[in-house]
Length: 394
Image 1 (cartoon, one colour):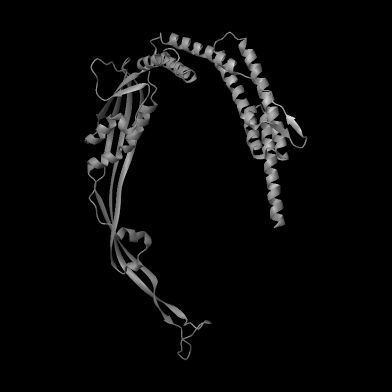
Image 2: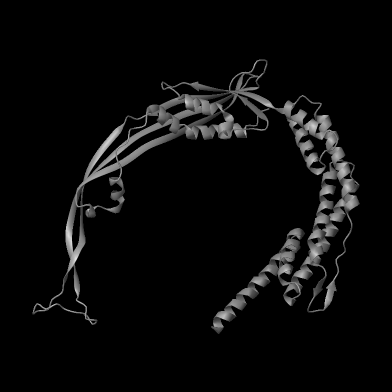
């Protein structure tokens, strides 16, 4: 018992040292905020105990170094004339403020062994944060407005991203929401989607309808508006052809297999007798029983119904402004109908477990070719959805 207790204490000491070592490594490598988070977590568990002292010291060291680094960076950036600096300055002030907020709830902090209070220098960054934010949103707004003068969809989408970032920083700033709506309308690419059947099979209408009902299977793209029918007066930037190239369907296949199942099983018991024909009893006075084994046999007929369908297609993307095919994606999928049932004659107890389940089944109709094509094309539908969702059309 003492060995178990000592081993547990030794393990806890190792874990504690390991945490201190990890935090030290984070401090030495300049990952101050990671060191602060780890120290805070340990101090919350151990506050008021000597075990917290190493973490308090590391917290103080990491905080001081992080604060010095960020303030130095801000001082350097403030001398830069590039307005892009305001994003970094704003983020640094937010980090400084957030860092203080992590530590304030723990105060006061003392080193128990040294009976000494540890002092942290805190600053009020509110005015600095507001000033940096004002400069940043003003810069983002001006930059977005310049980009919105362009007729290039890439520039317009960049403008939208800048306005979206601005709106998160300062909601309801000027006419940002209206400009975002404008940018989205102008940045949209319009694509006409068609299904082209180049096989000798009929594409089920249900499948065609689902493929062209983009919302029904989650096909969506913020910057691409897909249409399955051309709209009057609409110029389409792209045409997307989903071409079914080949559909193979096997004939209905039925196979029968006869299996003889045999097994030795217990069928009751007899009593053990001595040389005089008397029943032998055990130490408790109970008759000694001997299992009575018999061989049972059953004839099983296994029936298997099998049918397969393979679908091959290609997604072809054409830039209508140039008439060029800009991309194509091969697609393929398969569906297998495989059904097994069985009948038996003889003693059912002879049959293995893996075959027993088939005895409760009955023959079913083979799926139609139309159903096989529909089922086989479900993977095609998902692959097509991924293509539509990830498209980066301009």
